[in-house]
Image (cartoon, rainbow, N blue to C red; front, side, top):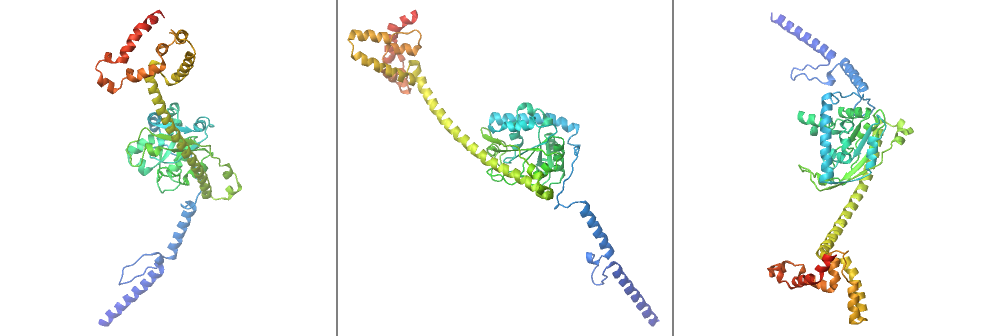
Length: 460
């Protein structure tokens, strides 16, 4: 009985070994009594590996990877939600309201100096029908759009919400919750996700707006300046896709601004007032040589995107140098104007003190030359002739003002001393005299007027 049990045990062991070999050969699965089974690529059968290779090849051929570039067609009605009736109603109210508030803030509480504004108005209002427009600019502050955009447009254009710009904003910044998402969609902002590449939905939505002849504003740098707007960084590849993948080549209009770093400094919660922003609008950028050349037909899509983005970046950098120069000249001119204004104010204040008595600086110089001429003649005359000649020259005139009337009866040097001694009282004279009748020059002046001038004044 014991021998039979051993034979049966050996028999079952042999069968288990045979089954183990069959499983290992069939499925390449290792059976080990001392450790658990491990499933890895090297243990799969050749048939499973073959199916995996076919699936990977199918995925590579049908879905382009992130490292390859191609032209992705976008239909005009790509995003129905943004163009729904509800959002159009919200845009018709929110866009004109916010746009005009920003326009008043920039042009009323701040100062905007614009060069080449007619180029933007011409591209916006006089471009062919269904011709798309792309505006590109540097990104200095978080409120560049809508503050700068609104400051460049007249109020009548800001009321036309349908034809105003679309722009892009990072989804983690502007679309973090349903409330902010609804608000930014109502002011024509499209969401883009950082790091999702140029073929994401937000870029497709922007291209669909261009395909309908719309206006899209984009910051080619991709984010705000990290040095306070001192330099313009290189442009990202996404702006190249907007230009090349649209159904018709859009008008690309660049402009650069400086001064927004003072209006909305980094870390500020509210914008500042009393600042100056300088904007320089350049000529439309031409890409015909890139698109129609023989090299363009042979170049890859990625290189074309890079070439377009590079040209836009160079144009913005050139405009940046010019706008900084214009801003510097404007600040110097403003300082000189303030100095001249201070000098003019001092002269006016001086003239205000003397003009009621005919002692304005320009008139006094002219009259002093006349007095010197008169004195020279008086020295050559007899006393009787001198008295008659002086009365003839400085006689009373009804056509002149009070200044000319006073000058007619007093020598200018005496009148100057008279005014300096007490007519224009300063603080000391006010403290010294409690009654103005005690001041001797005023008393003398009153007597002189009563005796000589009042009679002729009434007869004039």
